[in-house]
Length: 529
Image (cartoon, rainbow, N blue to C red; front, side):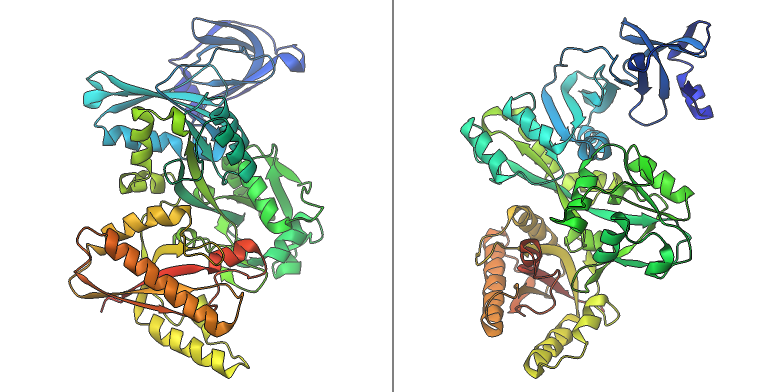
């Protein structure tokens, strides 16, 4: 069997040769392999015959086909096993990062170094190598970078055995993994020099573009994926069966999604009606099926309808860039790079410095992920937040505080930069340290005399007035730290601080994750006239 689109035939003419004719392969299933290119344009299935001169030979209904190993990776039990490629810097881990982010990130790094990137697949499945050639391709080789796509768990295994200098993950390291690596001499894996937040990502619930349902609650999603809701009419849609699409193999995106909607519930692995091989195919299947529902990373919506999600306490968030950057969308994750302290050379550090700087923001955004770059949005009376503050309440004291906040916010825009804290602590989380440097650069560009407010919030633990005092104290601390760190002292802006305690929660206070999202300091900027 050979799966060829017209474009694939055109692309393969220079690299595939038919070296014999024959009937369809009669090999056992164990001998069948699939040759795939990284960009998805090549997908060949046949019986493995040989590997020689960096070329795969497979038997198909067209005869024996030869294709260069630099064009494809081999999948299947019969694929040959090769020695690990050598490179100056090796990456291993999350397929979300390796496939979705790294190709353009390497291109951006190449441009940053005024070099040309030469990318090829290695003989190992899910692995590619990029060589940077100086002087836009006319100079010497500047370095080689090997990327192996596996999963987040494997990232820490590769760091443990030092087969990779950088581990790519779509989740944070666990305390157990951090302790094991520390014992091996890797250092403090959660220090700012070894743990790097490179992007954020929303897990977006998608439906067919014609589906009229705009919002689904976490409970709706739980019941749909548990098989309790089977028709769109049960959630305000048409009388149409729901086709639940999952992933054929467990991937990081699936793990994050199921953990969020099921929590500790026993039924955390529903059986979907259809299965997608990856996020690209998930988008295709949903776009083809009016009754479908699926979920993908923010980068992979690709024409499908992105659905708003309502959390357990009624807060509705849209899967847009701003909610992703503030990390207030209901199903969210961070993308990380990790490195060992004892296995980080100059080439590795140079790449880490690039990917955590503003220089990488554009290519991260081009990849479809959400960079840490700062954006700005209006806070008007039409937004979900303002409507929540205007909702009636029986608590007259709290109502007055809500009106105070509403009056302050409507004249100010909000920046996406949001600083968060651990419980009862004035210590910023790992992303806050990166955000501080970026915010200083942003504030230095504002016009002379611009008013900027640092506005604190808390979770609901403790008394209301005590929480408000704590929120003000945190806002004052962030403002002081930023002024102290800014080379110019930010003399071009007028800084003020305030706090509203537990008002306007970004998430439910019923979980530790929700409480963490609510312990924050926002940055408001005088609205432009």
